[in-house]
Image 1 (spheres, one colour):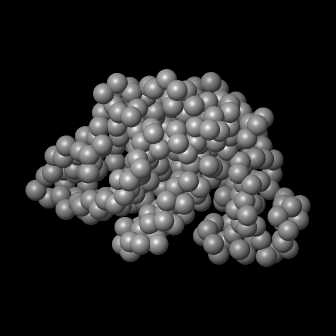
Image 2 (image 1 turned 120 degrees about the horizontal axis):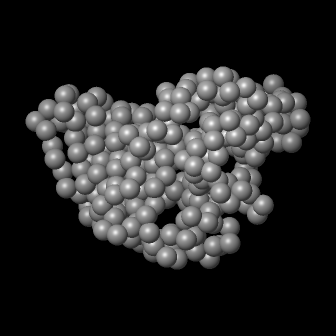
Image 3 (image 1 turned 90 degrees about the horizontal axis):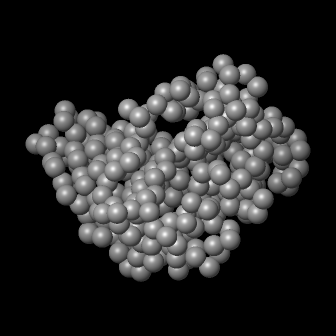
Length: 301
């Protein structure tokens, strides 16, 4: 893995820069920031033997490999890597950009996660054992946003902040790459991890009950705080209400289910708690900017 994003095609109007740190023990982190005016900027990355985590905070771009392609809008993330030569292209469209990038080598993943293979998501477990491509796209949740903040601090202020960022990466891996016993093995990279503070614990519980309506009183009782206190803390710490989080989590799961191609739109809507297709479509569009059918068609576009 090289020290930057790979082969660059930089237009005269592009003012995009990279900042990299790490590259010890199979873990490397970087930031892509700046602005392009009319034609954008393009890279090619050699991802064989590793997984690239793209956290798209600002601006839009396109990722594509031999078989998969993703349009990344603000608030979305993707995992790419593995495979034959493992080459992916990344194009940033005109506009301002801020993307956090984490490169996890196969060795790093095996060392940190391989000993708990029975808990790993089966797709990742298969990749660690047999190789093959990795391709996933979804909406950023609270864990990705926390990781973004930690990576930004680590890039600007080295030292202890980089140790904290590495801890956040491990925390993110525990949430996204593992699944609890009894969880749906066909779901995307996600799981329920028991939180330590009431806000994270409440969001974890919501994630495990997407087919149920939000009931604040019993939820607050489970996490050990008063309902009004929980509601205030969630809004203050995350910028979203619990109801908005439930909608986001439902749509995240819906995106994963649609990408699996194992259910149709109606089945997915019911799976994530929507009895009305029109309500599901409205919530899906508000979170992703696309209708469920447009989301399905994006890989074929």
